[in-house]
Length: 227
Image (cartoon, rainbow, N blue to C red; front, top):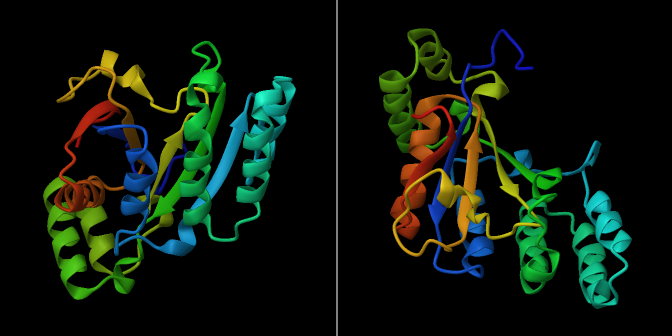
């Protein structure tokens, strides 16, 4: 259930169709490296069924339980990735490790029960550059409420205004299910980078625009509310 109070009543999910699977970690890194994001807010959390941990151990246990000898190199790689202290690097290297095994791991029935969430957050407005702060403030004033705009202008926002996550589905790494819900340019089997945001509309509009400016990717609404 969504908490009340300072949490804006939004959840957005937008996706971009990529050229190939190898582009997934590259575009993830591009997004998580945006100057407006706080690197200290990046955190992985793995869910397998009802179990969740802020590491890759549930995923490692799940893959081990498949009793597939060909997964031995993958398990070794995941254990190595899990020891990386930098959370952005850990997210990128996780996808790189999974890519060669995406077909072997594919499981449509269980894909939504094995997810790695990569949480991220915007810097507090007072920590943004003057140009970033002014541009985002303009979007917030246009798309969000007067109260939320005033909170942003004050320089300090509730953290829930600033938070989102990227979803990684190890059992459906290309995330092509969204082709059934939305119309993307390009091939119908193109991998989809899914980015979610639970905060202010203006902030998410800014982040998606920055990604488009950097990469040329076009983001399409796939779930939740629209901006």
